[in-house]
Structure formats: C-alpha cells, structure tokens
Length: 324
Ligand code: UDP
Image 1 (cartoon, rainbow, N blue to C red):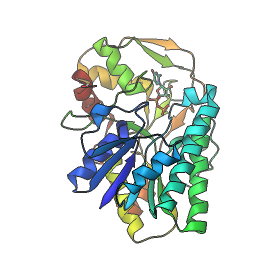
Image 2 (image 1 turned 135 degrees about the vertical axis):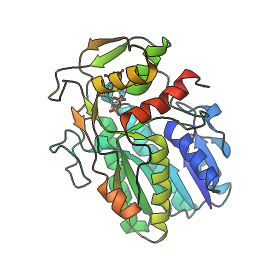
Image 3 (image 1 turned 60 degrees about the vertical axis):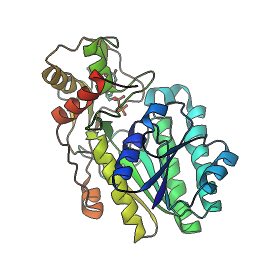
Image 4 (image 1 turned 120 degrees about the vertical axis):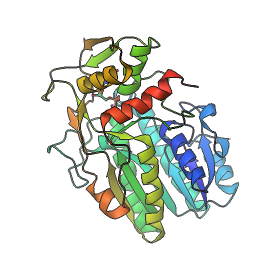
C-alpha cells in the first residue's frame, strides 16, 4: 500500500510517516515546508509542493500509484486565523479543494483528513460528541468545517471515501526522540511551558484566568501524537469496507487546565515554570473535552498514552534534546 502524506513534514504528519513506515506502508511526503521541517522527513521521499499549485499536485499524484491520501497540511493557529482569515481560507479550503480535484483526476478515492475540535466553537456540554452543534468561533475552525462539508458532498457526487478526524490537543513526541513538536514561532501550550523551563523561550504567558473553569484557566483535552497516528491508520482500514464521509473525535476524554499543565511540567522536570498572567487570547473557548466513544466503537481506537503526566514526560524528552 502507498500513502501520500500531505503535510508529512509537520508535527502530526511526521509521526504519521514514522507510524506507517513501521507498519510496512509505502510513504511519500508532500509538504511546502512553510511550517514543516525537512529534518522531520525521515520516512519516505519528500516532494516539495504547495496545495495552491495544481500542476505540482498533478506531478505528485502521478509519480506513483497511491491508494490513499492523508491530509495534514493546514494553517492551524486560532489566534492567527482571527487576524488573517483570507490566508486561512485560501490555504485550508482552496488548497484542499485543489488536492481533492487532483485526487479525482488520478483516481485516488480514499482520504483521511485532519479536522479539529475547533469546529464546535463554544461547547454547550461538558463533553463534546460528534453530534454537538458545529458553530466555530474562529476562521481556523470554520475552514475545517467547510472542508468537512465538501467531503460529505464529494461522497455523494463522486463516491469519495473519507474520514475527518477532529483532533483535540495533540501532545507528546515519538518514544525514540527522533521527532517531536517544533513550530516557529511556537504558540502551543506544552512546548511553551517546556521552553520556559529550559530558558530557550520566554516566561510562559497564561492567557486569561477568568474563564468559568476550576481555576479560571482554559481547559483542553490532550491526546498523544502517536495515538493520533494510530487512529489514522485505523481510519484508513475503516474505509476499505465502507463508502461515505465519516467523522470522529480524537481526544482522551479528560480535560486539564493551563495551570494543571504547569503543575505537571513542574513535577516532570523538577523545575519551576516561569510564567506571567496575560489577557485572554482571541478565539479561545473556555473548555474543550472530547467524547471519543464513536472512534472507540467504530474504529476500535484506544489511546495508549493516557494521562497528562505521560504526555508531558514524552514532550520533555524531546524538548531537552530537540534536533530541529
Ligand atoms: N495557552 C497559554 N499560553 C501559551 C499557549 C497557550 O495560556 O503560551 C493556552 C491557550 O489559551 C489555550 C490552551 O493553552 O487555552 C491550549 O492552547 P494551544 O495553543 O496549545 O492549543 P489550542 O487549544 O489553541 O489548539
């Protein structure tokens, strides 16, 4: 089996490449390296191309016979999407349409798509399942929801088989320390906490402590990146026997506040996390916690790396000796 990994030089995509290669699947990475890392492409060939370049997509999809595409390419920062919505819709929606059309031209009928918990907006229940109303409160989430709609229409019109995986907060790194989370600039909580500990980044800014949560800081559901990779492979198998467009949440079902993440990092590293209080970040919902029951039932997915401590330890092993 051959899989084209769009965005395979990024954080989740590179862990996917490692996972698939370990399962004996042929991997080709397509990435424009705007946020991905050449050093993270350690499994399979790299095709440097942009989703906005249809001719390059044709060359990539024509380079060998692909059984499926996994699509991780996206601008993915909530705050940035609030100030640059055109850029987000262009890249995340137009880019995906280009990819889907190229897949159609080359007869590739299976897609696993990276969606996001951001499609739900402000939750109206403690735990979010897939039937929760979709009302994104930022352009990033809206762009993901638009693509989900396109996939549903494409299933009816063209028979495209797809699974959209709505990630909650990806965390951790590969067990062998070969790849991990690295963004420039870094905006995510766990890397910023650990960089503050190491002194390789500034003191952590805690974005708001007046949310209606246990300690006033935002609550998120962290899920290990290797568990996300496993879910993608299960999603691909799921599509072998099924038509249609499917969606699944991927989270651990447990929420942790920003202050709890700080406390876990202090415990794991044995050092204080320098931090200051800052205003709320635009576009942030107070609480996002997944019900992943559907993924458990239908895909047979069980996160193997449970608990905040385990994820922070995994991230810490990477950050202490990050190679890129
Ligand atoms: N956060 C924070 N300081 C940071 C980065 C993030 O307080 O330097 C908070 C952020 O407001 C959110 C949570 O941590 O409530 C997780 O943010 P992240 O950017 O990691 O992921 P997101 O939930 O936006 O996908």
